[in-house]
Length: 185
Image (cartoon, rainbow, N blue to C red):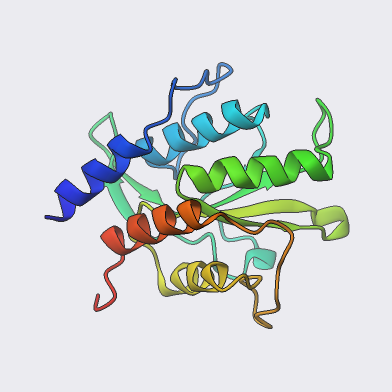
């Protein structure tokens, strides 16, 4: 049943057309369907996908959010760690994103199953997103729950109204999240 629900969700919200990857390969730590959803969101937003600054990692500032959520077998038949968390650069050699571009990117990502926030933290300014279509650790599940309540996903759980998702985006992300992170699991 889980596979059927997941397939129906993917078919209904399938990216059309699949975005160009700008010569990039799937970064280690991202599953293929997560990568394809990311590329489609970037294409729709008109933003180059080469803004990924962290997938799996243990930078102290990340406080464990980017540690592995699990492992999968990649196209080479090797086990690879993955995480549902992804950090994206706002400042970029090819141009910094404007506030409107950030909002559009967050909206396009939500349409593809990513929940996220803009973090305007000076030298560490970035966008933090979590892909709902993967099993994830409790720390990220808690961030997803915060997003549904329009909270910031941080320790203080403050209101975040920078981008408010549509009902359709919330319903899609919720269905995708629950399909991979059952309430009793």
